[in-house]
Image 1 (cartoon, rainbow, N blue to C red):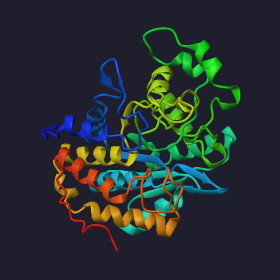
Image 2 (cartoon, rainbow, N blue to C red):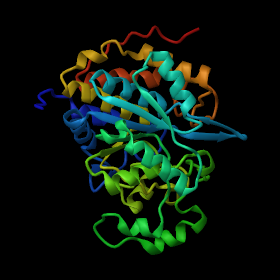
Image 3 (cartoon, rainbow, N blue to C red):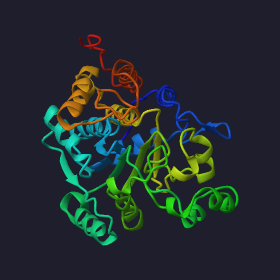
Amino acid sequence: MSLSAKPDWPALDALLRRDPGGRGVAAFQYLGKPLADGQLEAAAKNLAERGAAAAIVTGFAIVNQNVVAAETDGPPGALYLARALLALGMEVSIVSDDYGLPLLEAGRRCWGLDGIELAEFPLALAPQASQAWIDAFLASPRGGRLTHLISIERAGPSHTSQSLSLQTRGGLAPSAEFEREVPLEHRDRCHNMRGVPIDAFTAPTHRLFEAVAASRRDVKTIGIADGGNEIGMGAVPWEVLRQAITRGPAGQIACRIATDYLILAGISNWGAYALAAATVALRHRGDLISAWDAESQRRLIESLVRDAGAVDGVTGLRQASIDGIPLEEYLHALSAICQAAGAVVPWSHSGPRR
């Protein structure tokens, strides 16, 4: 396929590097370049050229005073990307667990996305249970046709001594520093940004990425992240990511799972919006997004909170905000991202609701 559309990649990258929450990763520069420099462009071009069937993994569990709920960052971006890929004629599945699935079900109803398949990955931690699910998923008709596996704001396990040694870097792995800084009980564990393990509330969806990397190299993987503890961040050397993360015990939470492409954003949903808008623009179908304005995204997020109990990942409150950012500020970025991608979306919101 000839890709002649020209999204403004520098403008998109600048928008995604905005870091309103001050987490450090999206804005961090290493050797004079941002982390994951050029990865949005590479991922969007590959998705536009080769995309036929995609599985999107999302849902991040927030534990607050013994109440567990999925956060508002992740599912809205996953649904937005899924809608775009579905409109381009791709098969789309979204994978989550017991905590994330209610948000996806509410979002699918809100937008009438009956063509998108939802799949629940079991919370069971036993490797054999996870492997059975993975084998069945990849052997299914949709799994067999899979071309892309995408993670959006999905927790992944931290490093081990082995994963540290297997990373690509210019010199030797900083093994002594890692051994001092990361206790044994915090290795190969999913953490929140405070360094608290959340494995009990997070299905091991990272094993799907490991299975694809091991046996399905025809499937390209994309990780979209904002904090450092998500699937995809293993593409960045541990010691570099440790420097980039400004909140929490950085070395302890840094995820070890790498993806073929890594998209970093100040808020992960923004990365999903950028990938969606750039992909439809590259397919010369920017018109598809013309009706997907900020108001429709507002309705979606409000629906996830009202109907599925979604919470803000920073405040822990059941409110229509994302990572502590008010909805008005957050939604302005969506319009700017779509315009920079060449898929212009008119700004049609009417201001704060009374």
